[in-house]
Length: 490
Image 1 (cartoon, rainbow, N blue to C red):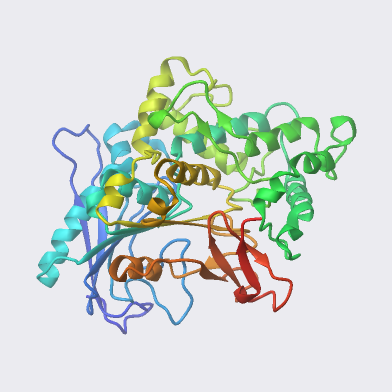
Image 2 (image 1 turned 135 degrees about the vertical axis):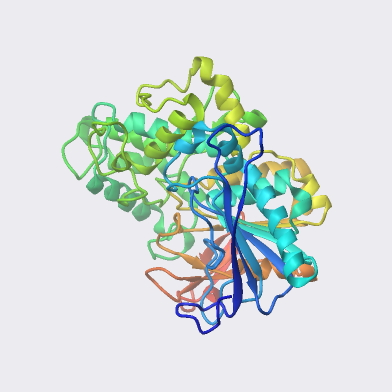
């Protein structure tokens, strides 16, 4: 029992239980337990909330915090403080969120991909029955990034297990993200292709300068991303050094612009991954996404590390490197810099199979819709880790297949201009869980929501617009208030 007055506890009194789920007898030797934690509040609202992880997982999601990328501001507390029984797991292995080495074990890879969701949910559901002498009335899931992919996976694979799901920045095309990372790294570390930090910042500045006011307000946020896409040629021309030859930090050479294109352009394969996917839509590096960060950017090292690809060689490349070595080839010494993933030879079938295990690209959401499930998805348009464009394409395909009214009956998709992967020019705090719960329990359909900046410009607010809308400044009223903006499509 954790007392309400315990040091550092802001969640009220709750019972914290940690447990393990052992692998089956047929699992390969060395398969890890699934470690989990469940928190049982003293005052329970009869709902259970599974919380997702991030990256390659590897640490137990405690369930003690806010929903990732759906932070709320005081006085609203965490889901546990609101009375939810919260829980999460390590997805079946112990390690760092940037370490893919567990993927050499097929059972651990399957747990990471999707199986830990069902195993942990079923286990915790029984614990809740024992603790409260009754079953939960609502079962929800919430997560971001890998956790967002887990949310989409839950809707696709286990539709009967969840009444509502929040999937923020979902890495639905997980295999595509990793392959695009390889494409980026192979371009960046080709002769002349590396973009140093000064040029990374220059690319951001030139792009924002060109597109900042397309939403009616100069605030260093690219709100109208679609309008900005029409300016790509002009932005590249403005960035290009004379004759395409590197002359310093005030411009980009042709080789460096090729690296920018490796980030921005879609990755198109000549073969299909699972669910007949052969494309990964590129990033908004020319529409306001910031790739100059030392952690999640294009890298700080001008050369490949002596022992192989390092974190300083760029987040996308480093993560793709680990995926290919552990998940696909099972070869820790593989030189991924020279690996031809466009023509993978004997690894083509493995690329297809694994993409189906770790991805969430199944277009069939009918089971979730038919059982009355509700799904809220949000993605930052300046995300530099998980491109928002695969989710945009997935959503458009849902509308094309089922019709807008059918999609609206169970799915709400929001995009947030200026929001990166947990950082950015605008970091939205918004009550996603409240919106989901009202939709699921009372039938209150969420429309335009309000997000408050929890980043550098703390306190300013903007509409959180259903796609394809974006916040357009009305031209009057305080620019720090959401009421001065209207959701527009152009």
